Amino acid sequence: MLEKRVLDKLATIVGKGNVFTLPEDLVCYSYDATPTPHSPDAVALPDSAQRISAILKLANEKKIPVVPRGAGTNLSGGTIPIQGGIVLPLTRMNRILELDEDNLTATVQPGLVLADFQREVEGRGLFYPPDPGSLNVATMGGTVSEDAGGPRGAKYGTTKDYVKGLQVVLPTGEIIRTGGKTIKNVSGYDLTHLLVGAEGTLGVITEITVRLLPLPEAKLTCLAIFNTIDEAAEAVSAIVRNRIVPASLELMDDVTISYVEAYKPVGLPRDAGACLLIDVDGSAVDVPILLEKVSALCRQQGAREVRVAKTKEESDALWAARRIRFAALARARPTIITEDATVPRPLLPKAIRAFKEAAREYNVQVGFVAHAGDGNIHPGIMCDARDAEEMGRVQLFIQKVFKTALELKGTLSGEHGIGLLKSSFLPWQHGDEAVEAMRRIKRALDPNDILNPGKIFPG
Picture 1: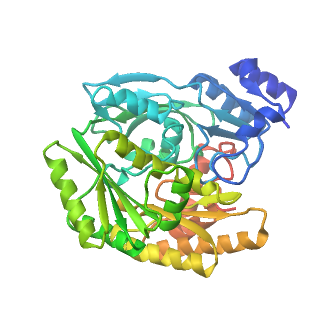
Picture 2 (picture 1 turned 45 degrees about the vertical axis):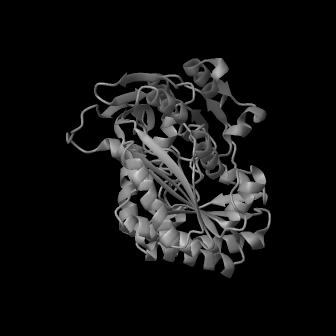
Picture 3 (picture 1 turned 135 degrees about the vertical axis):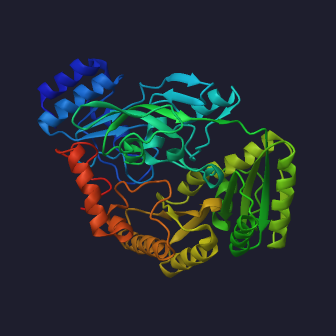
């Protein structure tokens, strides 16, 4: 529990109405999209970098943990205040500060909702590609802190590929700027991309400058239906092997299809072994040709049907089915854990086969989806956190998934981050020496370990 004088100081900094301490007010800040809640001691809602600076200086003086927070949609426990302290939601800082159409850049505050930003720039014929599944509620600051990706990662990359500059409050309270609006910038260390994906452990992001692209002239969507998940995975490899890079190339297995259709029917075939949801975009001339090539490759790999969305509404309905996957699986059991291993694209079929075998070996109920175009596989584990025996099997399954991904020269995470849930596995990928190098960076910027402590690093 925080001292009264600390709470009084917080109220002086952000205003009494922006400090919460009652249990009923704290509960929604005690969890994210993972099953590991822990209540903070207080919540303070700042509206400027200067107020955040004052809070961090106070926290350093009193050795109080501070956890920055966006919308809390992350899937690795990254915003859970496991040591109590102060949660710092940035949702009041939600404006577009500049939209420079001549330079193809925008500068925004961290609490701006991603989907709102995308709608604004697309209304001007521009395009900001990162599209995590939670884009309708996820904030720009959260997506930068997690280096969020999404279905369009195969063609357009992830958030780090678009962030050009930041304003950041360091853990000790100093306000700095990194990067800028220029296309080229090699002035000193690249602090911008040190902070992107740092999961709120190295600084509190208060402004974000991103690059924009011209909005593609045309886009078409198709759904390819397969009898087996192996056929679908092999079709992904065939598309990439033929030098075609769709805007999105998503895989859903039979378990996921079944639960999605039960939750919100859109006409996915329940008897299918898997399906691929594919977007191609580009010029109005090229897109129909590309879609026909993709459709032909799917049929060659065993697709029993390829449905082309005839309208934007049909396309949106198919993508809505993909985006509700988490909610659909969550209805099956009391607990859902969505993991996030990534392998090189040619090894996607081998990885999926190994993950499915591991689910059978440990008798774990799993629905698989994948950002198949970039090798990012998401096992959705349906379980009950109250059942110790079952959770033991779940942990063995997760360990097998990560071990297999790393053996295939993959990674522990493509877009969800390490956070709390994967911290013990970090040395598996990087080795003790590299993890210690990361720790030294953390200690240099955050000597009192107040900023999102207990995340990323084992122990």
